[in-house]
Length: 340
Image (tube, rainbow, N blue to C red; front, top):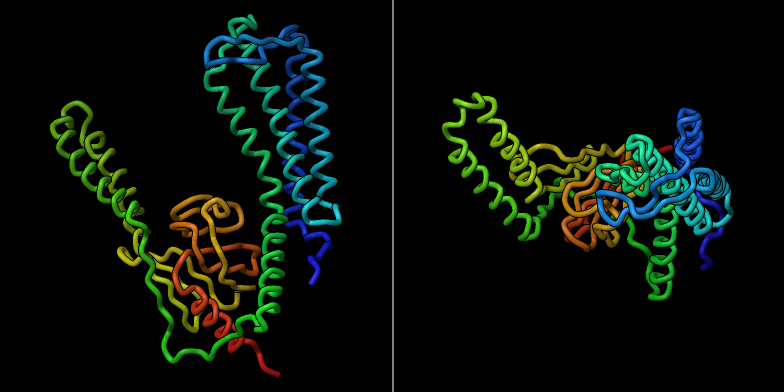
């Protein structure tokens, strides 16, 4: 079975296009606002956060940054229409990264120079956050476009079909609906329990350490720290043990300790459901994660349940026996389909 070579549908095309064009526009607007105040020499390199040790002429530096930002935008826009998913992903990734890195490089070098008055006195300081944010924003067009997710899902489906064909078996089909709702409990790794216990001890210590400080900072000052810690502790404990439930309403994930709802997906909103290998890097890290286009509860790299909804959202949860949960969801979805 050959891997599909047709283009992947690009989601959020308008937003992705806008994000690709913003850096070049920002460079142009910054140059226009500077006008005659544009410095002749710009600090462009710092070995630390203090004073610079590398400089460039403003004209060539402006031209290079604007050219790379514009080229990156054009590369990303062209990538949306590429015929192969790998080409789409690569062009969006490189285009967004080039555009945003060059755009924020221009702003992060020129503005400190202008504010200092003397290029040799321009301090990097907090401007390094602008440079870091620019590199991260460069990844957003490739992510929100859904190209990576769709291409990865398509390749996995193709791989599963080839493996099933080679082993002479069919892919899992929906099982008969159980008489009772299917429910599974998932425990977090030991390190998360240890972190919660440590935070609990720290919160208790905070109450004693801050005892008596109400005379100086008032009751609000006394309680602010512990209250924030208690809130963080509640979130940690809420994730340490979760419950995954499938019934006639759909999928429900709740905290096994505090009982609050973490994710509810009605049957009518489920577009597809799979059991697949999940890694923290693919879903934004460990724990309860939120990102553009969905959320996930990831404890470690392992098999888990992945649900795609009709609103182009995704949800994943790492758990044992995810195949059983998937099969029950498929069966419930099949049962809920209208009959002729």
